[in-house]
Image (cartoon, helix red, strand yellow):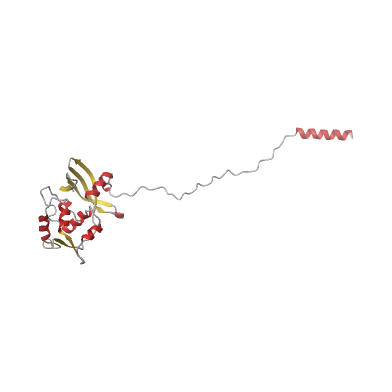
Length: 231
């Protein structure tokens, strides 16, 4: 019995002296980062701009809206004129009146003035036509009546006190832009350009340009006083 107990003690001693072997840790895959949550927003692209000369800054846009916004393929700024000239002498009065009136009023107001129920013709009170054009051009009512008498599609009726215009004009006009300005006292000079209609309705190649002189009147009005074509 004593020998058996000694054997057990000896075996226990051997077990305590044997090197300890740790069980290997289970294999673990490196953590996979969760994909970033998609927000549905795309990085904005740079806006596609047209001709850089036609991209106006705030002040240039303000001047364009005030003085040139409604002028298109028919306008008196394709040739030179001075303060002593009649800038509308060779122009179509129907188109001149339309553009000038719409610069300061809406289409609804213009339609309400039309006294004609016939298709292809529009009749307006002479005082409105003449008042609109003489307010912003150095031209008299007599000169407008004379000009209308020499145009096949414009007629001044002295007895009725009206202007009758033949209509039917169409076509896309150029895109205008104010590209520079100078103001000194009561004189405002605008550098402007007319650009061809480019892709996606933007401004394409510059077709014409010039310097428009505007006289600011004491009572708050203004007139196109001179124009100089530079291109």
